[in-house]
Image (cartoon, rainbow, N blue to C red; front, side):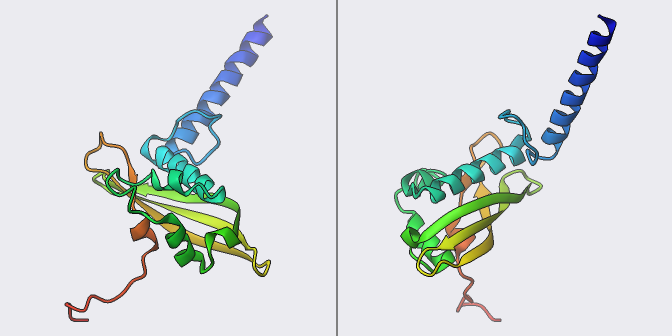
Length: 163
């Protein structure tokens, strides 16, 4: 009986330690489905859900991660085509992972770097791309909203400014 109690205590300590590290890592470690990691963990989960929607071509659901006033205006297939230079239906998202998630000092802006491995169905090439998803919210109590347009925009010089 004494051995069983010691084994149980050690098991609980190891499990608690692992879950504590998973929480402090911002949800970077597997958490058995528990919502650990605070805002960084939440952003990781949102990004993974978004990438899953892209993988299964559910562009309506993928648009739902944007602010309510932008959902109707966001054109996910166009943005995907700009990123990969191929129409979304000719793209097979094979694998994806979150590289890191970080928040700014105010806790109102965040970015999540993701790595995506795709197969281009037109010629069978495999490609790997990394890009950053930007998120924002108005107050720390508000939900996070994605800015995919900002994440995938091309940098062009502003004609009104000196360079």
